[in-house]
Image 1 (cartoon, rainbow over the protein chains, first blue to last red):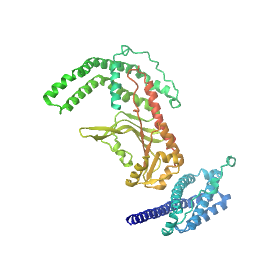
Image 2: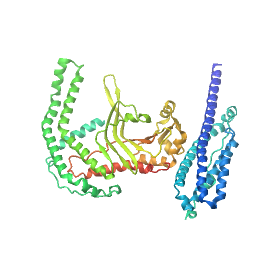
Image 3: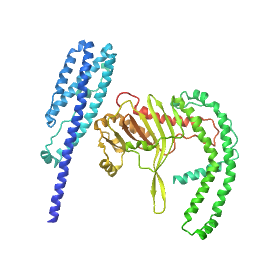
Image 4: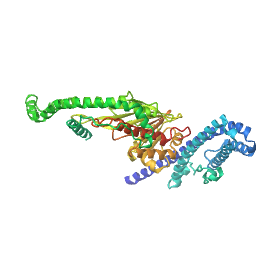
Amino acid sequence: MEIFFGIIILVFVLLYFLYARIIRNKNNVLEALAGIDVQLKNRSNLIPNVLTIAKKFMTHEKDLLENVTKLRTRESEGYDQTDPTSIKEHISAATALGSELGKMMISVEAYPDLKSDETMIKAQLTYNEVEAKIAAARRFYNSAVAQLNNSIEIFPGSILARYANAQIMPFYEADEASKQPISAGKFL
Amino acid sequence: MSFIFSVVVSFFSVLRLFNPYLLKSKPIGNSFEEIEPYEKGFENHYKKYLRDKVVKFEEERIKALKMARRNAFIALPIMLIIPFGAPYLFSIWIANFGNDSLDFLFFGILIIYSFLFWFVTSSMTLYQESIKSDIFPNILNFFGDFQYNHETQKSAGSFEYSGLIPNFNRETSEDHISGKYKGVSIDLFETELEQKRRTNKSSYYVTVFKGILITLSMNKKFTGKTVVRKDRGVIGNWFRKTFSSLKNVKLEDPNFEKMFEIYSDDQVEARYLLTVTFMERLNELAEIFGGKTIQCCFFKTELFIMVPLKKDMFEPGSIFEPEDFIDDSKSLLKELNLIFSIVDILKLNMRTNL
């Protein structure tokens, strides 16, 4: 009888530790997501300044500049941090904006006056720094998501996840453009 | 073990003083041959700053050896008599003071030997120190505005914030070098940290760290503290995780994870600093320094690096060889190039992220 109770207690203790781990992992994901938002906000704050300078020179890139403005607005919209679908949409907006900004920064090369503009040089340096920080935040987020998803996909985590109100979270993947192999010919 | 080894080496260096050809000054080539890429341009530097000093220092070297030999003639008979007279000395001591106080006798004998050894080697030590204080700065100025001081006021204690410095009770620091390389301020010194251990009867010191401590100025300010430390296995790492205020950072590189453990109070900044390329570079650096694990800490505007080393760095060549400063220059250039490789490999001079 004592052994039976011992086993029961042991099972409960183990389940509690697994439950606590899921909660910890869930909170880590939220922390990582907040980290991403801080960096995305920094990038978002940089965009108006870049656009103001760019508009003076990049008269032929009107569509691109308008697209950046639209995507910035879409990315800045609020989202539900506990809903994977909402997070996925937010990430997708951020990725799309990153991709367009990348295109814009490459286009700058075609405008020597803009490229040599002191404010633009500073803006590009800050942009590179912010992008590097977004990449770092993305690595932290993906690592936290991998831990959470592993803990709730493996039994008995899959059952405990319901009680912990934890769901499978989407990864923050790099945009398709940056996954493509680089063709040197384009730049020559 | 290393103490016994150094005693044996020292004893043989005293014996070398009796070599009859030792005090004859040999003809010196006086030309520096540039072999390694980092030696490029040193031939002219050697002609300009060092060659004129060779004759004077060669005379000083012979003078130091002569004095050491003269003192060895006085000291060696005493050193040899002590072991032969020891049984007689012990019996008198035991008869008067008993067995319990034998430690004092051993201690006394050790002091006599230490004094005699100092008496023989002091002139050689002074000569070698003069090489460090007068010649090393002239070699180092090849790299621009670099300063060398044989002694240092710096202490390993000032880096305790990093959490990398092991507990120590005794510190021996020397060879302080500071300057700028490719716009990065470098400040380093050599140190040996020892911990006091006790047994029932006595106490002794154990070396807990021997190597160089390097501070590199960075071109950015860090918001948090990130520490890259040696992996200490499952139990060691568990203790670190439990009792540290910093959180463990899991990185993607499995090879890096095998060698290092990362702790930081800013998970995003830790990943911003420790990019995949940076991790590869740190592994490369560890191999350059003989496979020993390098530990580092990013804090405020500095990168602090601990490099463990088996042998002393920044030491002059043998006093038993004719002086021309070529060996000193070659070894110092090689060692400095190794330090500079930290800046080059880690690309600390770049203004963008690492």
